[in-house]
Image (tube, rainbow over the protein chains, first blue to last red):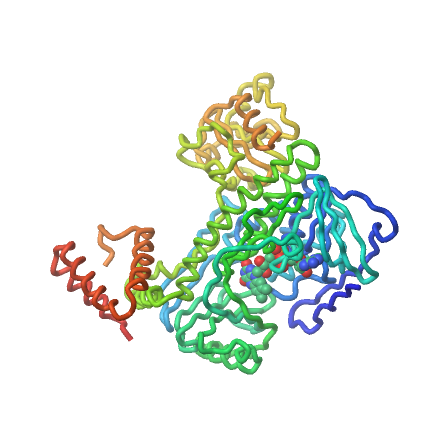
Length: 555
Length: 64
Ligand SMILES: Cc1cc2nc3c(=O)[nH]c(=O)nc-3n(C[C@H](O)[C@H](O)[C@H](O)COP(=O)(O)OP(=O)(O)OC[C@H]3O[C@@H](n4cnc5c(N)ncnc54)[C@H](O)[C@@H]3O)c2cc1C
């Protein structure tokens, strides 16, 4: 029997909901074959469930706990993640709670050496970064699923094993009322860093683990400091190591500091010790308000992932597929991108519109994205925690120079996560004019947002299926425009130079969109259901676009 | 020190990593000699006494 621990009730800011166990049909003698079952109701599993619902698939989500994430965990969400969340229908809830930020400062000892500044443009609906505790994000996702009945959430359901054959996966579970089994055509493993499914199938993650142990603590303090990322190297409050501070909603702050090799993690975790160290840092920055400790834990940076995110009928996403260092807000943002990439492909395969091999492209696109994160994260981590004498000397030289030389301060840039372009994807159009364009998102990149004359945003008009964005194509009259694309569910969206164009056409009287997308008359962009560009052409040729759609959908 | 001929950020990063790894490969007892030789080689390549002395002043700042 599996009875999950009750969620904590002594949080200083968050009331943990408790979700009851409900008896599944399988425990009363039925044995339906589910289309897709998601293991893990963490952020990645929940985002995947809503994405699937957008594409018409109702998933079953199996979650061993009876509540949301224990604590704040992943904190910072990129613009790309906010855009994906917008598509999920949780923007109002998220933006009402989250804190938006654009600036950061890095200090060496107590002097500033680097200013991070992320531009915020009127073209985009969202700012570059928000902070929101993971427990809130999960709560909003669960509310969204419940409000619109988008998926079947099975709480207190712990997966204990799985087997697969050529046409289905059988999962074994334990619950408060005993064990049962269920069958699914496909399974999405979003069961986190200690993935039970990875274990069951004997799959190993490989890569490198970095030196350095960090202590993460959340404190509640009424501070007047702005919402910025602050980092200190070798501050008097933590000599020889680093210190990070990030503001969260509800008056919480994340404090993250490195432990030196001569410091015993078990000793450092004692509340008195944590309180003393944080107090000395608050003294350093002149913070006098009283504060309380909400939580603390230890953290080590890994760069490890599975060799293939697909194992037969099981697809791995989020922390179950890859573990990346959290610096530069990479952890969960890449898991959200996994969900966004996988869901439409899964939906298309389940509906019979695509061959099963479309699912291979999930790993072919997302694993290189992980490897790029490893490369960036390895550089930031080597600066935060130099792995050798040589790197330490260079890091210390850079910090010392940075006090007088701004160019050296650049080396302390935390390299915030960037969306990954699927530039080498097998799904990109075989022949397009990408190289000829001088502006606009390149083939493989996510479509850039743009502000429309009516004050709305371009991204609101894209999807949920494939979208064909045609520039000036409406001018040819109702019979001539857009001939020939007969793909099911393709949305055709024309950008018109006319100020009052036909319905389903975007007005661009000043040529603003033309310019932003490097477009000329008759030019078109094919946009994937996940918002990435599949191909772009100087002239619209329905046959060429049909061929690109066929390739995109593995039809 | 940001002269028109300064390195791009990408190249600066490459030099950073290459130097770190070279120092690791040589071991601590050879690192001072190597860095001194490197400075002389770079000064020779730069071919300008004034620039070298200004660079030395910059490097001498904030040593403790
Ligand atoms: C202390 C801490 C601090 C962090 N800080 C940051 C940060 O600042 N920034 C950042 O980007 N990331 C951070 N992370 C990482 C971030 O939390 C993860 O990247 C993120 O949670 C991954 O989401 P996920 O859905 O893939 O996995 P998880 O959030 O781990 O969700 C997996 C879910 O699967 C469930 N599950 C597991 N096994 C089973 C089973 N056998 N049966 C059924 N259900 C199961 C779990 O209960 C859980 O709900 C932090 C993590 C920790 C622990």
